[in-house]
Length: 140
Image (tube, rainbow, N blue to C red):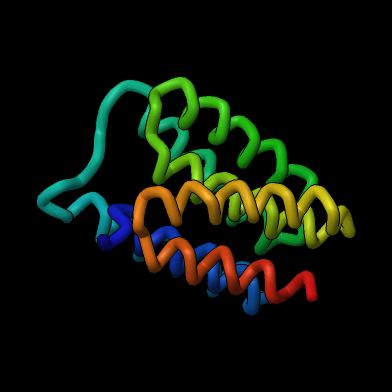
């Protein structure tokens, strides 16, 4: 199964290794464009806000503001759960885990990423599973 949000997941993966905000910003812009052009582009009440919050959080990470990123990811997570979008919930959890790593909260980061990984596994989304495993490897 292919992640509907694979382009944004790539942007998350980029934040794991990139430190330049311009690189992250270009990844996010590219992801947003590819998602909006997709035939099965998701939409609906709450989705856009949750998705935008993930993008905002990635920019915060790129700008060295992990605390602000955590807030954005947590807000996205709450919306994702409210609208029942499990895939977006998984991405928000994994991204939040990355931000928690950046502030040194490794136990919370591990829990968040493992929760995102469990959802990705339930969905059968090998790409999100791989992304979560990459963030977990950073914790080793």
